Length: 429
Image (cartoon, rainbow, N blue to C red; front, side):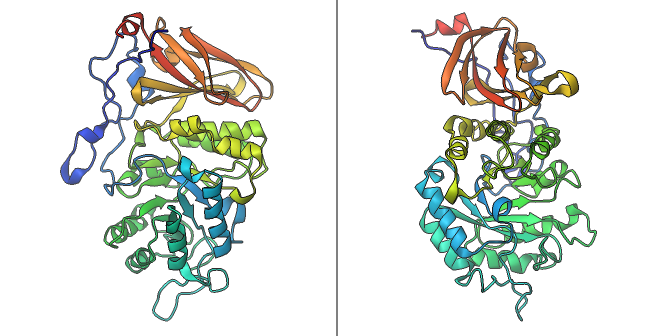
């Protein structure tokens, strides 16, 4: 059996072009000696020209962050036991081994007021051992601890915010050995986000500890346009909820900013709802597929201590996770729509080793054959492609030409790995 040699586009990370202070410049996806089977439209379809503009240079987020966050399932009903048990479950289920290493506490961990020295204080009823002891527990399992604050005078649940306390709070988080900060947008006094978020970046950078900086600005001021020089990820949308309507709307909103994302800084369409009960198995599979393809953070939002087999199957799909964590770091995007209201969709994105991830997404109410045409993918129609189904874990065909289609159930999504090939390349080995 002859080996399939993938098409030899040289895709160069713009990290190879280093400017002042090590900041990345130029597009992520570049071509040298572009092969004839790529259409001239390929680089336009998968535009990354805005990636890396004055990008934050703290060495983190080379791939989208993976882990767990407390909010979607627990909201304010959290305590140190829940956090510890969640860390234990990430280990025992094997999810940590797949990359889910961030254990992120959301709102409600702190006391309602600062102490007499103006410092944040963990709620003594729910976190009696303190955050440092919790961090030690998490780190002892090889995981990372995340914490939450707000670029306002209060958090969204009216605990003390960090506005005007950035330096003190960043030093406090560093002293607790915190690894990650989610920074929200409530009670912001009407001050523009572009003014409120950079001070915490500076505070974190001078705290003595490298801390992942996750901006949660809700997409209010189009953070993709400016947050790349501030944080490691930035929310592009309002909060997700556990419904098909919310998930699909948010996917579309996040898609707009695909050309701005890449290693070091990612568009964030909010946390995963997989396993929380508001969507069907097919809808959750679509949710996970599209988030993975969009290079979104994969932050589990369910109770990992009590997952169903279906939930675990979705969250633990190594082939889908590999799409999300691919080293090339190009955000996949919507490349073709058809049908009434555009409910039959093709999403795609380039991967390392010159492959493509392609999703056929049926947002309609009945099963439908959805077809990805090579023109929509930026490929010449004559190129032969092998197609692997990442949910069925099997090769579908090793010789698709011009297009590939499949019957997709209502509200379901198929995700494939495309490996283009040519006769001349097949004969190399």
